[in-house]
Structure formats: structure tokens, C-alpha cells
Length: 398
Figure 1 (tube, helix red, strand yellow):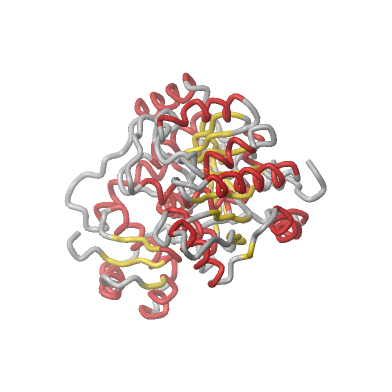
Figure 2 (figure 1 turned 90 degrees about the horizontal axis):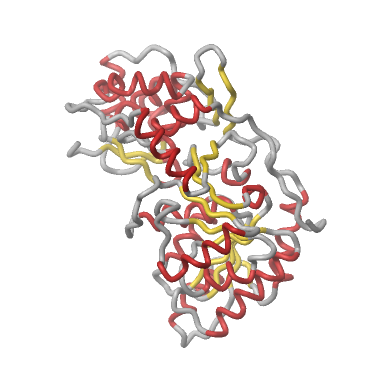
């Protein structure tokens, strides 16, 4: 690796087999997303304890039906499928988890990975763009991927047609990451299956947060785009229409504090309207790899990940794993649930309009621990909507 890019990963604590099964069961249970997973671990201390408490927490949140909890057999079956596919699961606190991804809100607790795992711990540049890319757009994507890859960066993209494909192919020798919208055994599009095999069989890596056997749907692709933006230090957008998945990725990158690069294009080409719009909004004008390398250099030379927001430590007493995270307020939820009057006060403060959790705490004048616990209960009951930026709203129909 060149001096311009130094890998920040490599620290962490490995999960035991028992912990990995518990983590997989928890994230595969109903109404448990990445944020809810984190809050559960913070509240009860381990995934095994969280699984035991799910029914009670859901009931307190107002659910009238039993919450579905993934079984040990289901988790073991998915682990066996992963092993047959040559893949495995990496937890957020383990050394092989992408270091930059740990820092984002809602980072996946577990990632399914296949290929050269070390590729995921190197500093990365995301490259995305039009599926119906022009010849010049695809050639420029390949040029950027090749030059940035030779400087020591991993190239990450979404395995889509067009720009994604060009970027992956140009970085096969230097290291590339393909992020899948479905399970690792359900790659899309079908014509890129052979490319995926080249990636995972060489210097590259495939990752997904979705279960094995999960066929990707339209709503799964924004989740994939979030991972591309989260793993990368910066995102280069080459040919993107005004309404495209690439712009969704760019919004995620900006929200995560990543650098956004955009390649200018003809105002007459609809494929360039989105990238030209990004430039108007302050994206870095990119006409050569040097534009990207000079901007990323300060980020790559400084170890930004000495104090990750999430780390997992083994608790030998109960076979669980404590996941320590920044909850925003710096206060861990209390062990005892709030009273009914406090719960009603918090629920009454919510509505269909998204609000910041800190605003709920200030409005109700209740302890942050009580607010977080009630929101967790509502979430498990399927009555809470989570929005970008850590905002929440109440499902009035739930």
C-alpha cells in the first residue's frame, strides 16, 4: 500500500460462536433493525438477554400480537449456508469489520462477507453512476478506479451495470468491494455473476447485510447504497440522472460526512443532470484521479478510527456481548422501565411528523434513559418510524 493510503482497520474483539448465533437471531427477528439492535444491547447488555426480553418489551410498546423471534435452528441454518458458499459473518466490533462503516448511524451489526476480507479494512473510494453509461463515462470510471486503486485505495460499488461494472473490472487487481442488495447467494444483475466470482476469487470482497436466500427488491437498493457510502471515505459520481440511485448514495455520503466528487458532463445529456447538480451543491469537481487523491490524502493519513462509536466486548459471565455506542445523550437506558404516566407523556409528545430524540427529552423533561426505552418498546411493537438523522415519528395506525 502506498503512503497515500493506510489501512485503519484491524482492531476489535472476535465474537464467540455462541455470540454470533445470538446476534444473528436478534437481527433476524421482527422489528429489529440496526438501530434497534444497538439500543437493545445497550439496554440489556447481551444479545441473549435481549432475545429473552423481546416479548415483554414489545408488549409494553403496545403490540397485541407475539413478536416473531428467529430460532437457533434458523440461525444455524443460515450459518451453514454461508459456509457452503464460502462466506461468513463479521460483527461490528470484530477486527475484519470495515472501520469507516462502524461510524455511521445504523451500521449493520453483522455483515455477510465473501472473498479477501482484508480488502474491507483498507481505505475505500466509492464509485457509482448510470447503468446506461456512455462509452466515455465507462472509460473514465475505469481510469479513476485504476489510478485510485494503484494509490492503495479499495474501490467499492454496487455491482450494477454501467459505471459500477467498469469500476469493479478496473480494480480487480488492486482490490474492489461489491455491495449486494440481496443475499450473497442472490447476486443482481444475473449478467454480473461471473464478475462477482472474479471479485471474490481474487483481491476483492462481496458484502451484504441481507439474509442468504433474500432476492433483492426495489426498496433494498437504497439500503445497499447506504453501505457503499458508509464503507468509503469518499464517493465519486460519474453520469447520474436527476432522479437516480446514485444521487441517493451521494446524499448518504454527505450525511455521513464523506467527500462527494462529481464528474461534470454535457448539459444536453440527461445522464449528467444529476452530477452537474451535485457540483452546484458543492461536490468536488473531478476531471482526473489527482482531484480525488489530493482530497482524500488528509483523511487517509490520519487514523480516524481510534475511537469507534461502536465496539463489542465479550462478557464471559453470560456468554453475551456488550455493544458500547454513542446514544447521542451519552446516557445508557435504565434497567427499570418508566411508569405508565411517563410512558404516556412520551407517547403523547410523538406524532406523524419526525422529531429529534433530543427534542423529545427536552419537551417531556424526562430522563433520556426513559425516553430511549419507551422508543425502543414502540419500535419493537411496530409503532415507531425511524428517519434519517436519528429522528422518529409515531405510526398512528399501529
